Length: 125
Length: 281
Image (cartoon, rainbow over all chains, first blue to last red; front, side, top):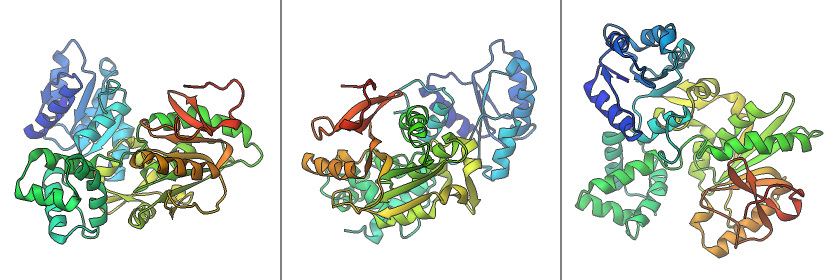
């Protein structure tokens, strides 16, 4: 699941995860993502989450997902321009598994997903 | 040969536009060092010729090669992962047993470039060594520019994204303006030294572990032999040598034996391999 209010960024992220054989669904903010998740029987394996979005920001989304047992297995990765050390600590403390600072390269994103065991061996070489 | 101002400006503009990377003046050496393999790959006689051709006739593939060379090559933290996992799972437990009285380890990151490997080793040791142990890591490089860069220990946002888990970023780095600097508690265990691996090496205390990865590939066989012989003199008799995945001592220097180390291989000086240790052909 790709959650970002920028359509261009959603496209970039979808293209990257497609290379790892992920089929991505999109949401423009945290609330829209939660609404979508409520309708889904199969929980996505991974969510790439922007921080600053209207309606519900990425940090609130992470906090809500972590409080929901049904969504426990989702791997949560913040993908944001927020680069203060304290912000990273807040996101990790709230339950994000990884944190990618924009701008990033495709290789960097794939390496981060590899750290989380989401990249088949050899796919990031 | 140094990059001309016009060539440097061309590359700076390209990477700023395509990858949001700002190359400050003074990085000419870095740009040139990274583009040498690219120029060779495309069959240009020099970096100057490569850039001149590209400016005359723009070509998206070559532009991509430049961006990759300046953003993805040789800059990852914990590059290739497996050697670091082997260090934690196989090498350090053995060294902790055999160095129980000294409780101190010395590691060498040979050809340390901008320092990511040396600091990745420091993070690994920081997390894996038992309390009461200390360590020293020496990085070396032939480029004084790279030594300076590694000593500064400052990395851009793009660089810290590369293979560094966020938990380690916040634990071992501090923000300095738009950059991240390796924290003092890690930096104080890491030093850098200018060294040419193909020349006689200085007399310094031997190392328990040497990372000499993706260095030999640049040399011809005679130079490989000489580097491996030099390095053996600085490796403790029961120490461990890690090479790049595409490199080996086999057929070059018979004094080394390849041994299994977790999911990868390492090299040890032949007489020192304990009986029964797993060997790989």
